[in-house]
Image (cartoon, rainbow, N blue to C red):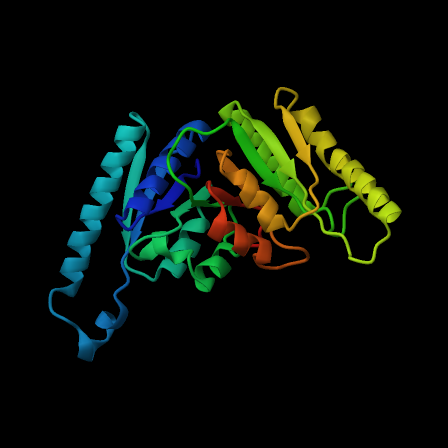
Length: 286
């Protein structure tokens, strides 16, 4: 069974952008699109606090939101197979459930509630780190951009013999595949910071070693995707600052978990809140 691209919507303008992005992504990856609206009943499930007509109202609203989202996706990508689902559950549980059968999860970064507003808070960020498939947070405005997929890698982690950690390999794999699908190039950034007391000569040596390690990490992906152009950058800067500065011209920013993290690290938190393009979170533990 082909795993669909799943997008959550609450009917907000940001969720609409997420639906359109997900429709494009599903078309590129030749997958169906599945649109989900999560309606949480809160205290309405408690027998002594049930409000008459609440379930009917939630159903009517949810079906209206889904119908508009399906129409938007069909208009953006005619011929794309689209299904929809109204889920009566908390967005956290609904997203986890969808993650078990999805190829990717797509959400907006701001909205009225549900999926689109979820990733603003620590609960949503923590949840994204536990979904076992790539999670894309659609940020930035819809506009013409360069054909560039931005990838942030952390080479300061414990590495494999190939010179790249498993997390960095997951980021590079996704970034090169996304670039190949979009006829784009990959802009790889490894930002690093220098201890204040390190001698100048040691800084130069460290910078050379960093570039060599990045070349080693990229070598297998250059070989696998010979038609994908690559731009390398190793700025001495904070990763969030370096990545967000480049994000305005990229079609997608790909990042992994933080250093030795089991959840989304501080860089992921910062990038999700400040990037000016969609952010793909990959290589996160399920």
